[in-house]
Length: 355
Ligand code: HEC
Ligand code: HEC
Image (cartoon, rainbow, N blue to C red):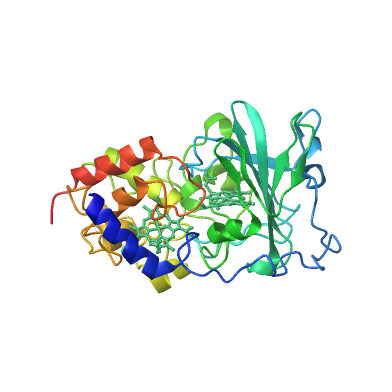
């Protein structure tokens, strides 16, 4: 294993040359992502305090403002065990353009927040705000706010904070774009999307059903069968397969999807599931099976294959999830193993017949 890993490291360093996403990112902090004209609300001014962003009507009492709705995606991104909450605000009367059901486009003025807590204390709250009309770098403002010790307010930290509390790193804005950038995922928003909301959210929370009923979508998906709009065919093994593929959809599919430069330029594997019926009619036709299962790895030898049926040791997916350091996946924003996520993926790999 050690030998394998050593030669793998050498290959990977040749292949990528930086440790933050493996390939050069077009977006840098020098680029203007705070445009001066944001339309109806007048010129956009980058907020310096969380209290200026409209999440709370009273930040002292933590009262969420009217029109701001909490949501939770079905499959979470692992963030070193941080507890997370998320909210969205759409300008009154606007809708999410769902013409492309797999990649929604949000209206100008959309704001989405994600709060991180550890040990019961708020650490940071992140903001994605659409200030322009396109889904490009200059139309989306991204920043994290670091909470003060008394949790009275949080201050924008565009340059990020390393190890602000234990393992928690607050990403700088360039890192936000390595996952949320238009070169990685053309929706920018990663959690509020068709497959991630297509479940029965607890306590009448926001889910695809409510997005349809409350008239948030320009194109509505067809009425559900058995409560699910985009069901995967029930097959033997589904209880074991769905958690693994869902985990990778959320944790890996943001970069490994057909609209991403990672997939187009570097490694063709895809982990993002699709809503189209012909990508759901069996597990074998999902993008994950088509591009990963028993497919030879491009950057061998992290394992001979991206996923080798019945063999985690030869599966790059297992090896890259099971390491913290240079070749880890995701390449950023993780400093601890996700043992539960790895167990789900391993159980699936072990259940697959060898080719
Ligand atoms: C490692 C990739 C990664 C990085 C880096 C990252 N995010 Fe995210 N983010 C995600 C994923 C995946 C989700 C959806 C899953 C979840 O919320 O658990 C998400 C969710 C969010 C959400 C909720 C809206 C949505 O997309 O569903 C906000 C807001 C957000 N991130 C803001 C930021 C900001 C601001 C930064 C930089 C300070 C940042 N993120 C850095 C991957 C990342
Ligand atoms: C922030 C973007 C990003 C995310 C998120 C991400 N990856 Fe990657 N992945 C890359 C890049 C860039 C490469 C190519 C360079 C390298 O190997 O570092 C890559 C390469 C790979 C490879 C090598 C494929 C081959 O054919 O050799 C595997 C396997 C892989 N990733 C698995 C995963 C898994 C599993 C996850 C989720 C747990 C994940 N990735 C999440 C960016 C990402």
